[in-house]
Image 1: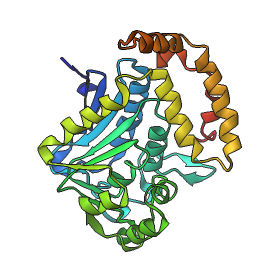
Image 2 (image 1 turned 90 degrees about the vertical axis):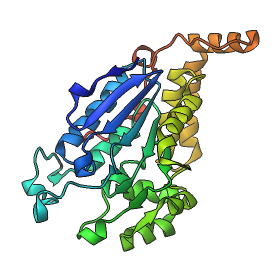
Image 3 (image 1 turned 30 degrees about the vertical axis):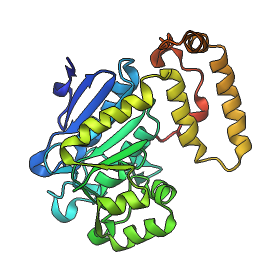
Length: 292
């Protein structure tokens, strides 16, 4: 049986079962549009999953016809006016983008994160998926980086993530035009890794999450996730060499290594003793800037 933690959230249903945390946006009547409560819930979600050693991976999906159909436009023309926004934060006098707070939190997650995009994924519904490790979509899902058609600009750090995922030319095409495109185009461009029949999507995401994590040491996965994502910010391979040498050395002394090698030799499944909550080595190299 899973553990239903839904009462902790306003905009998410969360179930943890078989090592997987499945978080489902639960505003189908609003097409799961993004609001301040969703920001708070998503930040809390990843704090919770990082701290829970029962969680090996996180899957984010939506209820109804949408993954997340962008910002809640209930405030009309004031929707993107930071001076009128609830609970705003700032960086040196500049108001912080709430979507960016979410994507940066996903970026530094200690557990792999998968998107099971079940319908419309527009605006922040598309950009919040960019720092996720594996993106899967229903065959009838649609995407859109529609900011220019709303009079604003790309947010949620998408100017950093999107060109790295699909290349600059495709990123510019989607962002300049603001057009909505189908799942096949998303797949062809590398925005998503696989397409599935709508009824099969969540099961496929669970299968992929277990494939990625069930036989691996959780601490090694947490560290590898940060090494690979943080490596995107480094200017020279020597920068990564300095860091991964230190991380590799710390793992080489761990109880996980002894167990992993013994299990391999004995042809059995490994039972890794180290936990993410207690046994991560120093990760100060992965710290975000002080404002984050």
